[in-house]
Image 1 (tube, rainbow, N blue to C red):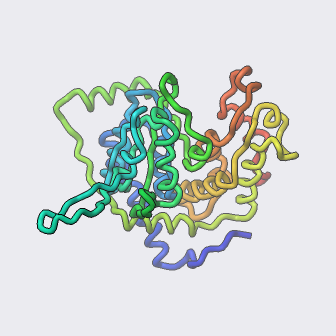
Image 2 (cartoon, rainbow, N blue to C red):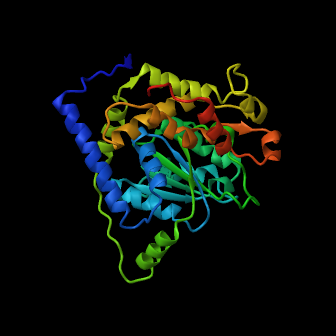
Length: 342
């Protein structure tokens, strides 16, 4: 049994939309690779986040092209890009915007005028998000979940699509503030950005130490991206595959009687229902990106680490044994295999 969709999958219109999705995906990759070398897994996860309509947290060392990648992707999408450098003295109003008093020169009448902040963009880069206190970090919460913000009691809508890419440094902890669990849970992915291979680093040098400058062109627009996000939700998924996603998420919860023993030993809190939703949605995008029109067990399992690594909270036993979330998830995938014949 498959979870049904509202439009027949064999309709000519839907086939055209799927073909266009794949053309845009190929176009984005072609344009971004003019500037970005390697990082294929990271790029794929960012694009999946875009087509789901989710947000991504990118964890990587300084100088690994996090900002350049986000800016380049925004250019290829034809979207409005803005960047916020998070610092300890950043205020919530620096993100959301604020009201100012303006005086009419003719009448002398004073009125409140709202000046939008950088949050009113399509692609927002929250650079070093863990460098600002929780009060300022929380200014993003409403925007990330509700596509809106509230300033002085007034409610303002953020035009879609709205996509937050936040970066953080994994090693420099002095002067940082860990993200609250509620905010972490609103990120679709926690994407880990690693070093390039020697050949890729050589290519970076060849691209960036000469007078040549790559020109990136837009291959789509905001309206088309919103259509792709609707298209993703129409991809069918068999009930057995959806149940496998739920089984994986539920197995991360130590309170679940069916959880593996290592989860009960090392995990304090497991993933929420939102994790299962994001796991299925990201698997649907992955299927479309691979020119398939249904979700497989492989799609679900491939998305487990980026979707769940920031949603499981390890205890002191895991810390003493020097285990990371990815170690637990690797063991989880072995403990909860895909059904036979899949």
